[in-house]
Length: 130
Image (spheres, rainbow, N blue to C red):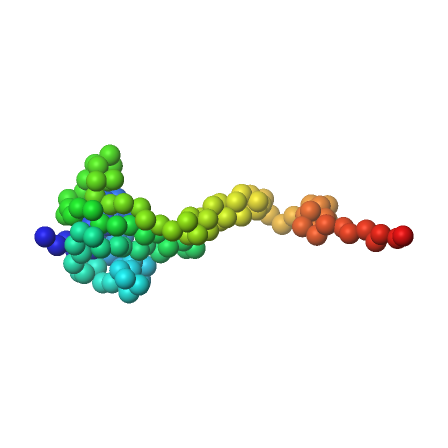
């Protein structure tokens, strides 16, 4: 049995709608064996599907096929996350970087905030005299 990639991505809840899954395929964000695929590409069990979500490339192994959306509790029976450790590390670094920025809508930093930020980012090195 084979299933269209856009249907499978939607069925295993990687995308909220099938049209979003098809759009991701058209934009080249879905890869199989390193090649971007069209939404009509047929997949079978054992294929490894890669999903680009900047900056991470998630990889999933197809364990079972379904054209119908499945219950969230059943997702582990249909796919296995085989994302490499270095890609997961990129995800963690992205989360850390996002938490260090300024809150949205707070405007430009004041002069004092800017000085404090510069002092934090560029530590002061003292000359050691012997």
